[in-house]
Length: 489
Image (cartoon, rainbow, N blue to C red; front, top):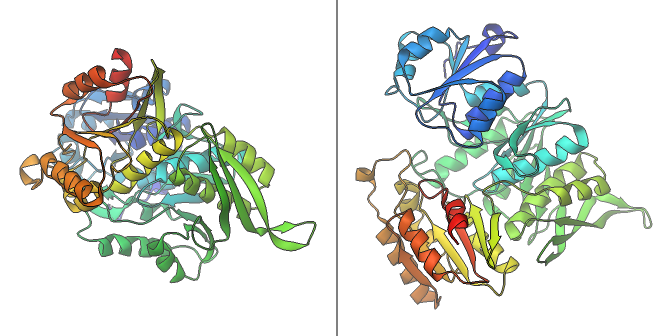
């Protein structure tokens, strides 16, 4: 980050903003916000645009160059340049910006600039961020006409952002670096008034050498909270609880297994809805005049992980004074995030689910949710490991993530920003680890390696039977597999 940049001074209404790497889901959303706020917006990306970025840029008539060229930046004459965290000096546009000392910021800094006059609700944690952000965004939009930006497309709106005139601005607090030369997690730039913490586990080993280094960033995030701020946290997560208890900031806790301000009394997992009975310590029982009463909510999303996501929303909005009846109505109408347990097809008795899970806990919880929702079905898990560093650092946890699946197809590791030559681990290592875990714990499922998407499609086309459920968990080369499978079965 260039410490001399003051967006208030250099970015006046109607000013020009140029995005390098505009095709990312968050970058395109912030670009769409900028256009909607009246700024002149343009940008570039290295490759073909995909949904939802393609639709966002088209809707707001944002000019996007395909391919990076220094002259595009020179001709842009923008007031500020926004750099994707994935772009560095090897990009000719970034190189030109740096050499000419042009004003540059991360999208996190620009998002703060857009939200600075609102009460900022930031959702942080290792996983569950997008679904929880989407859920809170949906609730605040409908109850207060507030704004939101999530890391995935909300199925209710077919968009990942909304600009309203309400009191709040909800967005996802990513712990990954802000820019290539700025290792600060993005969430530090958001300066949350309200911080929602879902869970805390080790992730991003390419940026954080150990859990303690990641933990210290969350500790710093909490320390920077304003004195009148509010932290809403998962009381079942021991690491979060320890961090939060070090602070004097006001807190509201939610949980399933441990004591919490908003705690489940009973959960019923049904085929259509999950029903949650919660004891809300902040509500007053009119009949007895005692604090604390049981409230019932229903959600359409399956699994224990989504109960936690719903509890986060219930705990926050009830603590802010929103009525239980209002929250319950909007919570029931939330359809979730695309690529988060998204049912994309039910054809020939075969259910195809698309999911973004790549952290071991997310994989495990996704498969558990599938087993709860489809207890009599054969569960197929098609998994694409994401990055060599994450796979190597979490291989023991990953090996234990597939217990609920009957059939597992595991692809080559998707390198993303990493080079294969520095991997030090292969998909064969992962398969061996899963098999060793299965033998030790007497888990009976079938693990197979698939070299590419075509092989996976051929196996599924030949072996799937009516009643089977297929869950595609992929981020990279396999991320369209669910839709391609839908067309051939």
